[in-house]
Amino acid sequence: MRTLAIGLAIWIALAATAAAQFEKAGEPKMLTGDDVTVQMIEVGFHLDVSGLAQGIVATFPVPTDWPEQTVRLVEKRLKNVREQDITFDMLGETKQAQVLVRALSPHEDAEAILVYEVARRGVIMPSQPEKLTAPALRELDRSMRVYLSPGPAIESNHSKITKLSAQLTPPGGTDWDKLAAFYDYIHEHVQYENGPLKGAVAALEEGRGDCEEMTALFVALCRAAKIPARTVWVPGHCYPEVYLNSALGEPHWIVAEMTNQFPLGESPETRPILQKGDNFRVQGSRRPEHYVKPTLQMKNYLGTTPPIVQWFPPPGVEPPR
Image 1: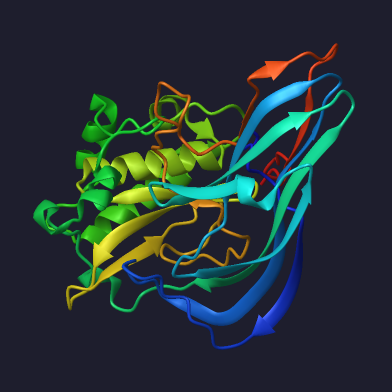
Image 2: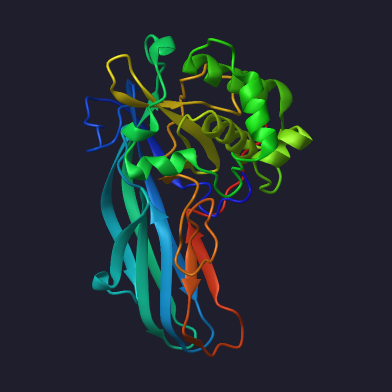
């Protein structure tokens, strides 16, 4: 997936099987496997300047806990950055770091790399999926209602999306039947092809796209059917998950791998989750963003050549399938 500035991670995968607490307070449940993959991931930046630079502010997303993931900050590698000048805030449910570099002299460099240990589990199929139901709007917390609304590249209110969502809904079928119909349609009618981000409608019209287009189309069809859904971002890849209630009324997140032929509801994915969501209000951007990109701004720069920024993890490309 070429557009993700949060792309391919540098990580060390260590196989492990251990009992761990993956529940995130206030987060709906998710059924996970027993095997745990422990990885180290670096997030942050390295900056080189050719001239005086002042008032440098960098922002970037960092991993956080989810039902299928726990994280621990184990190291901070800092150069010309004071530890007290690193702060964190939340953009929706995505955690973002902000780093202030007060000034750099000509030909100086700065670095802020945060090293996280990430323990990750794959997601397994829920039992009796036919009994899962979409929650009523009145049951949803306000923070969850965004997952029913259109967003960047997810045009769930477009006539072509709403029409197809209704056409694919089986008469008298369950909400799981709807998901299965959306899932099967995309696998049968959208050919995998790497390229620039185009969105759900373009994927439908052109019949091709990569993981971003397939995910956007699935999320759009779900939202058009009043089923909350969102995007999950891992290094070099993304996939959707949907919000459904069990027969006991317990909320669950259910995954759908769109570019691999895994059964609906299962994902063996163990790459670190970098963020979840697809409609972010990012400082400095007038329009909502599809994902949280790293940014770097300077108040004053007197260099003879542009500054050189290296992001961690570096941009990645999803391998062809």
